[in-house]
Image (cartoon, rainbow, N blue to C red; front, side, top):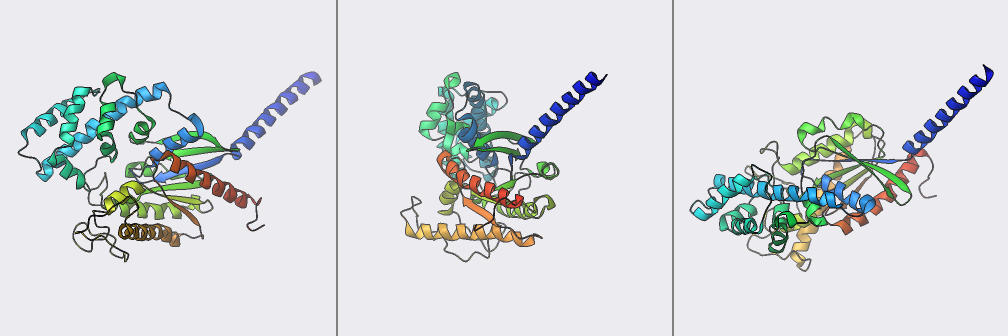
Length: 381
């Protein structure tokens, strides 16, 4: 009997030790919650993190799966643009354009693989005056920005090769599958283990966010600064920038996040620069009224600006608008109960090298904040 009790006690001790070890391992993880409005680039950042710190490259199976996603994105997006052309009454007299559209609509009903001849049809549509005019005025069109990348001549030539098409890393990073629910990934950065949660950004997904994430170590909020002139996927009466700012404020004020550091990524700076050179940042009246308290430099509609960092006038506009946007987001912390330092970075999440540099800096911030919260680190010591 005594020997049996001894064995049972030994087994219990081993179980307890294993549980303690598992708890220590779990508690040592740096848990990051990735938040932001729909289309902000969260999921692109999530893919970059996996590429940078876990997989190092996409597998052949992932590339094969991505072929269908990329082809589907292109077909769906060109159809969306054509529907917008119809609403805007563009290209009504271009019979060939609408004939091609009918063909592409048929592709959109199936998992169509884009061949070389299909690529010629798509290129003809893309370069038509109607589609280009619609693309340049797409603030109310719910289409992915990546379409322009895929439709560049050198890219569509690669993509439109049927089953032989092997998506590049950039092709995969820019592809889009709308996030629903929560995606989780663990990876190591240096000596630290990170666990990142990517949650759906559309309004109907947000109510699922908060309750499950009381014990996160940090929050990364992603906002697309290029969307200052665009409207929501769910409600075309609401400006995307205004929605993102309001969402950031609500997230800052959540009781579960009162003691965690916030990292703010103002994303899509490349698209922002391109758009800023031709679309007014501030509009004082009308349906598209926005940023009415902005007092920095503005574009002259009669001037053609260069966005390659050589145009001093444009760089002043870019710097002023970035400063305005950073302040606009950061001042939302005034609605919180507890004081907070927000760590802000202006990024392009499709740029792997840029993302890696920024995330390495963020890693140090998060680890330091975690030590501060645990009483293991004294600032200035």
